[in-house]
Length: 82
Image (cartoon, rainbow, N blue to C red; front, side, top):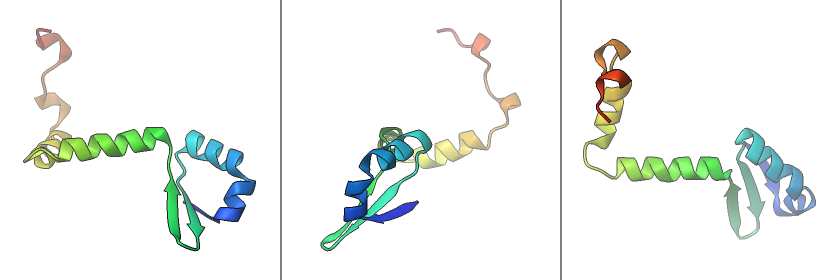
């Protein structure tokens, strides 16, 4: 994660935004009254999706269970009647 002052951020805003977008590299911007963090839209949308999914009761456990299920125990795409 890049950490920069608000003054430095203003001087280099284009390159910092480009780096954040291209490499999903967050930037912490420090200022007198507090700090801010800039993240890419892709990262932001991923965080929103994670928050949404984990807002359902037992969803976290179901996701972990799915991650731990071997592919051999899952249903193939051919077996699903879309």
